[in-house]
Every structure is written in C-alpha cells, then in structure tokens.
Image 1 (cartoon, rainbow, N blue to C red):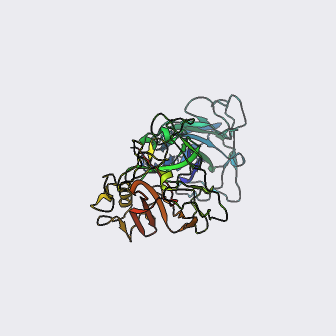
Image 2 (image 1 turned 30 degrees about the vertical axis):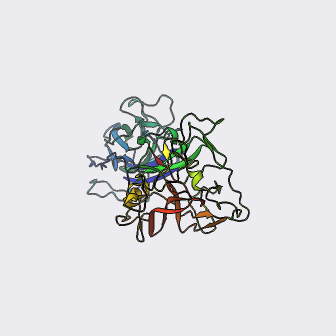
Image 3 (image 1 turned 90 degrees about the vertical axis):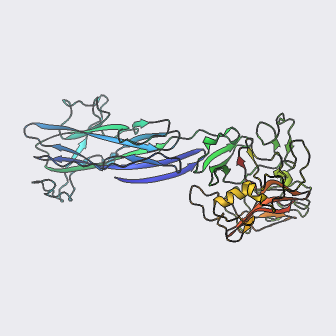
Length: 480
C-alpha cells in the first residue's frame, strides 16, 4: 500500500489526513490467479497524533468467460485506527478521468498468469458503470463494465461519485482491525473483452474529526496531551498551544498575550472568588506604546513598584534582535498585584503570590514552594521551573543553574516546551531577543526582587533573581 500523511493544526482542530492508494487488479483468464494482501498493524496510544488506514495492497478478481458473460465480486475490507479522541471519518473516491480498468500492466509475467500476454501497444479498458439512480443487480449488470457497492448487499453503482461516500465514522479513538468498512467490487465480461490484467486505483481518505473547542478555564487534565493541543482563553478568545511536558504537568507552550487594560474577574482569571467585570480583582495597566522601533518610553519598566505591560502585536514564534515576541509584563502585573491570599503584599524571600494573570485553573510557575530562599538549602528543587528544567536534561543537583544544560534545545517534536528566546524589556529598552528567554515565577525574592527562569541554547537557571521592574514573558502551568 502506498500512503502519505498530511498533518495540519487548524485552530482548535487537529486535522490528520491519510490517503491510501489501492490497486485493483481484474484478471480475465482461463485459470485461477493468485491472491495477496498486506496487513498493517496499528496500536492506539496517547503519545503522538496518529491516523492510519489498513487496506490490501491489491484485490484480485478472476473472470474466465466460457459461454455468455462471467460476473465476479471481490470483497475489500478497510481498517482505520486513530488516537484522536473524537475519532475519524473514512471516505473514498475514484478519479473521474481515470475510472476505467486499463489493460497496460506490462509487469505481469507468464509465471503469474500462465498463457496471458500483455501487448504494451494496445490498452483495452473496462469502463465503469453508467450513472443509474437505482444501480444494477447481477442480472442487470451491463457486460464489459465494472462497479462498486458499499457493504455486502444491495445494488452496484458507478465507481465515480459526485460526493465521496462515507464508508465508516467513529466518535472516539479506535484501533484498526481491518474490517471497519467493507466495499465490494464487481465486473462482468464476455469473450469479446481481450484477455489480460486490468487495473485502476481507488483512493481511501481518512480524516480525524474536529476536536471540540476547549477553553483553558474549563479544561480538565485529560484535555492535555503529549502532543500540542490548541485551546482558547475565554477572556479574549485567543488561541494557545498546551501540552503535557516531560515533567508530567500541563503547560502552555506559547507565551501569554493578554492585553493591557484587561479586567481580571473570578470567572476567567487566577484570582479570588467573588469578582466580576464591573468589580474586577485587578486590571492590567494599559500597554506601553512603541515610540520608535522596539524602544519604549524611558520611564517604562523603570520602577520596581511600577506595573507595566508591553503588547507587541507580534504573536509569533520568531524572535530576533529587532523583533520582540508576544507580550511582556513586570512582575507585579504577572502576579496580579503581587499579593498573598489575605491581600498583603508578598515581599519575603521564597514566598509565593496567591494569584496571577493566568487563566482560571492555571497559575504562574514557582521557583520554590518551601517558603524559604530559593537559592540556598536546595529550596530551588521544590519549584516548577526546577522540575521542568531537569525533565529536559538540565543537571541542577548541585546548583540552581548550569552552563551546559539542554533545557531549550533538546526536546523532540511534539514534546518540546517551545520556550522562546523572547528577550526582555527594562528601563525603557529592549534586549536579548533571539538570545535569551526570561519567564517570571510567582516567587518573591524580597521587596524589589523576584525569581524567574532564564536560559539560552546552552544554559538554564531555574531560580535567578532580578528587579521586579523588568518586562518578562509569562507561561502558565495547569492546576493548583
């Protein structure tokens, strides 16, 4: 069987198409021809998106007219397997311009079909049935024609359909057994049809069904897969990719891009209960305007007690020295004001804020959860950033940073955390885009400092500390 994958990620749809090409071989002979089928094994798993079609390599139908006409039917069983949680739809088509069975297979040898020769200069055909509303029975089947029917009963029809017929469909993941759909092929020939091997190609198309639109605020852990899934933030309908990463937790694998001016209420954000849009817990300050190129006004990202947002309107994965990516927030913005659950400002080294600008059900990662200074007594080992970094190859046993880490560049397709080298904003300037990544944690260092994740292509620091004024990126992790 020849096959090819076409894999696309479209909005909230994980769309995978596999087209199987089946060669149909009809043999007009005076003897029995061999039969052959290739079976493919498919196992459903939850590691990567898979869609596979199982069809025989060839289907043989032997017709040997003696007197009158010979009629024959061949069964074709198709199997489909996918781990897509909403299942698949299987259909078929035959090219309207190439629907005839053609006698031009010069690879047929006497050993395969004794007494049969194929004249490569002469290509007789067997045309498909004429269009008929009711179809054809065996008795009404025209001579020297071929056709098809879905299933094993009923009439036969022209092999070319105005709309590709659905052969089978599921609403859940399924394993391939090779019998999810059965199609029967038929032909009737008489002695006027030249002896030989006739063939054509049928296309079987399996498409994964669309995933339902999932909002981050209503996600459950089973919505998070090891391959990136697109979900939506109900606060602004923006799409984000999320995935279960190597540390076993569900993470955003694209940077938060929440706009300045957004009101954080209890329905949509990681804030206390009881707040509404008319009475929000926190409102992001207006986004800083670009004055020239990627520079910002000199008084922005310049005070550790200030709250700053810079939305770039460049929500892509391409970051370089002149192009910022996504959005940047000072620490007090990222933590929705930097307070604990009692409403007090968090200024103690190693303590975490209770809330953030993450969606409801999500939170800002931590650099320590032991309520003690992250960079002493191995306390950095309790944080989310540490767990993620070691899961992707960093050796942080003796310290919270490493010069030869592989956190950023070693993860394989489908599981990569996709952390961007998005650079930072500080004191009115933008730098290090395309070279370093900076991501806030929920952990305070002291009154004017906070911890963050810092990395480049060969270095990772899971508990660095810096001034709260800096404009860093934000990634959120699912759950409490």
